[in-house]
Image (cartoon, rainbow, N blue to C red; front, side, top):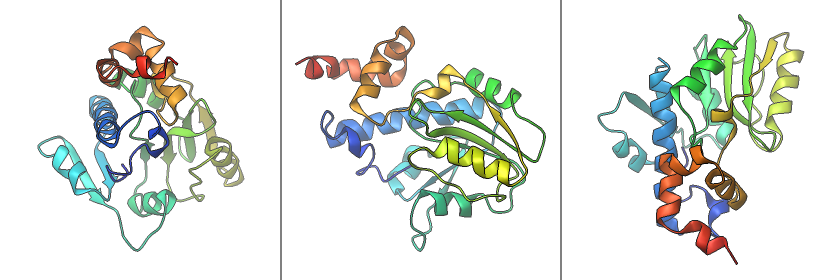
Length: 205
C-alpha cells in the first residue's frame, strides 16, 4: 500500500487527494477482508503510519517498508524472505472477495510453481509463489508476461487463473467508469463511494 497522499496518482485528474485517499482505503479493506476470508495470514506492506492506524484492531499485520530500498519489487522481495508459500495481492482490487481468492488458490499448481491472476492491461493483480525467491519480481508495465517467462526459465510450473473478482484494478479513469458499468461494481464499497461523490456526472462531458 502506497503512502496515502500519493495513492492513485493517475486518478488525480478526476479525484481530489481526499477522494483518492478514501478510495484507496476502501479497496484496501476489500482486499484485506477477502484474504482473511480465504484463510490467509495477512501482512500489509506500507510506508504510511495512516495505513497502520486504519488497520488497527483488524486481523492483519503491518510491515513497514525499508527506507533503504527503492521500489515495489525490492520491498516485496524483502517481505517474502524466508517464506515457502506466499500470495501477493495489490491493494486496489475493488471486487476482491473471499470466494474469488479461494477459486484462485484452488487453481494453484504444486511447488515449485507460480499462479497468476492478470489485470486487464497485462499487469499482475495476484500472484502465488511456491516458493518465492526463484526469480526476480518485475512489477510494472507488462509484469504478468515477465513473471510467467521468468518462472518458466526457473523451471517452475505456471498456472494462469482468470477470475473476474480479481481482474479489475483501479489505475486509470477508464477503470472507474468500467467499475460503475457493472451491477457488481456499482454495489461494491468503492462503487457506492464513487456514485456518492457523483463521479460519472463529472466525467460526462
